Length: 248
Image 1: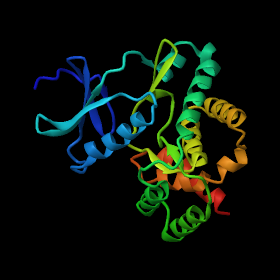
Image 2: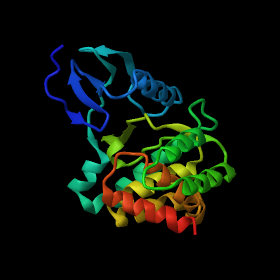
Image 3: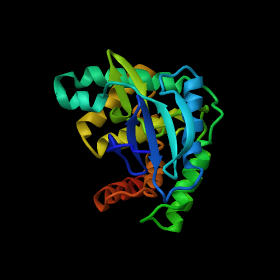
């Protein structure tokens, strides 16, 4: 099948637009179950009534595992902010409102966040076994209500069309603590812009009634788990600093 040039390239896949549908083709190094793994999570979010692209099929395209899904026209909220920084608070309000709707889904039938974080911490780079043990002890001692968490929630995973937001990229979704999901978003923003991170956190706390201190109990755990990802040495140093300061 001739797909032309991809409209987006991520760390794990190439995204194509073909016949009015999105075709996401996963990289060869990923497990053979990766497409189905992501599709199950996205289908679950769709079944909950959340604004998520409809999945037509999990298949193979040109010999590679792929997901074919609905094409959502529009621009990412991140791109909209870049285009008009004067509206950054307005757009961030929209993103927080949507995240709260996601977090309102209780006890989802998905992979447990604790299991996912345990696996990531065990495979994290730049921290030793003693640090990993301490992080895992902290992880398993936190009590929380199980809710739907996106796992990679930020403005570039939100498509805006006439004030309607669609949430994409559900591969990291899990059943866990919304405070961890918020800290993960805060951490991603802080590595891009501290001002944006602070704005996001302030708005989420105001709208949810959850305090910054409650969210930051997850700081060392989420930072440690992120060290399992393919990140730059500069970002790794920042994450190690968070881990070490939280474990003092």
